[in-house]
Amino acid sequence: MLVISNNTGHPSLTLRAGFVEVSEARSDWAPDPKHPLSKFSPSRRVPHGVTLIGRLFDEGTVAQAGLALEKAFGVAGERPPGF
Image (cartoon, rainbow, N blue to C red):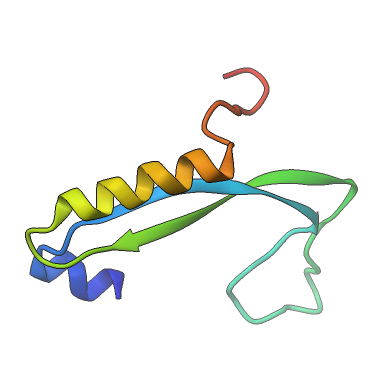
C-alpha cells in the first residue's frame, strides 16, 4: 500500500506503537546456513511502529487518529538511551 499511496498523494502517518523484545537478528532475505543471524543475550528492546494511510485530502482524520493512538499507547515520551 505504501508504494501505491506514494504515487497517489494519500496522506500517511507513521508513529511509535510500543516496543518488542528481540532475541535474534532478523532478515527479510532467505536464511544462509553459512552465515547464521546473531542471537542476543539478553534480548534487546526495540521500537515497534504502525503506519496509518488515509483518504485523499483527509489529513485531519489521519492526524486525529494518530494523536489518539499515540496517547493510548503511552510511548510518546520514551527514548532510547543516549537520545
